[in-house]
Image 1 (cartoon, rainbow, N blue to C red):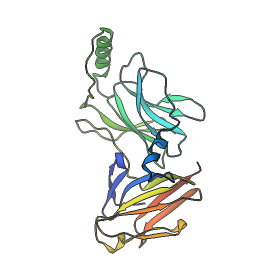
Image 2 (image 1 turned 135 degrees about the vertical axis):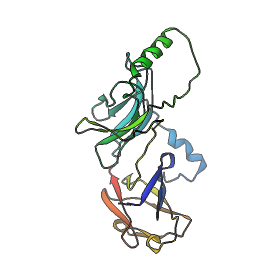
Image 3 (image 1 turned 90 degrees about the vertical axis):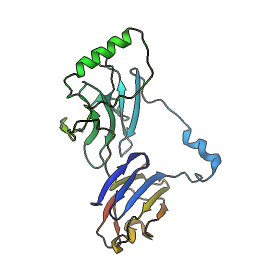
Image 4 (image 1 turned 180 degrees about the vertical axis):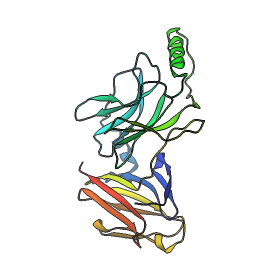
Length: 255
């Protein structure tokens, strides 16, 4: 485990480390370098949700079998709540409390937890719901704007126990969290590109090694090094620095 990882930028799957930084992880089509192949990434578009007024911010589970997303579909609550869609059964389950507003759900890799932001502890939640319902019923309209609610805090939901754990308590808008990806999930048989950025000069971080795939690559300081390969076997594999002190896990799943 890369114990020194300390910051995540979700949009690029970027992680700062005192020694090693994984900037991005992406599955790459064989002809991805061709500009004319861009349309292949938008082929076979399928609608996944149909219920409710709107739905958005969907994120895949690490194994690709489920989707966590936010949706407005409760007649008594006009705001987003968090749901999990199981593609094997087609079942959709709400995992947020049902009160208040929610946003930004995320599967925590290697655990049974799902993280999201919620205002359900705000004593005025029901009042705000009723006021919003009344506004919509009036036929009036207003431009869309995201409400950075000061009562929004981050919670972790356990799928095993059904319990909810509060992760932030400070006054102010808390949401859009992410976990440092010392666990990277990719598909077997799909080309993968890993971009490593080394932001210091310690000899411990001079090299990254994926021993199970016979990959050892030197990492020049303050530069990005690309590692491209196609995992040919499924399972859980450890990657390390050259001194075996910084460690992470690569999970390869069958497509």
